[in-house]
Image (cartoon, rainbow, N blue to C red; front, side):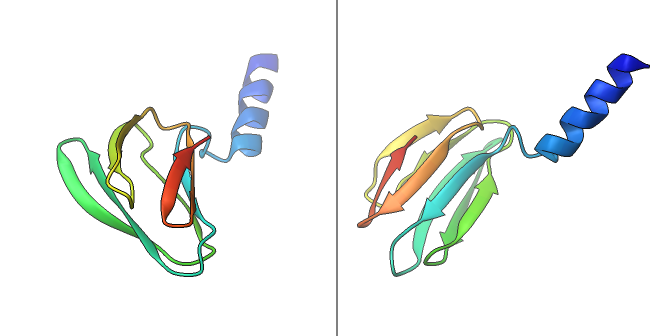
Length: 87
């Protein structure tokens, strides 16, 4: 029963979002990431000042400046000045 309580507490703390990458757009205008996940490519528009979660199981991301990175799903991407960096 103690293990169940610990698992439940972890679920409540992490809320199921512990394994998703995040992107934070600190720019004053919208930016777009191109995400390739499970063989499907999509554009992910991020409004100015917005933070989103995506890429729960790993993916490839093309940044606003054209750089391409592989993500595991635990990274934070910060977009500033039209460029993105992974933290």
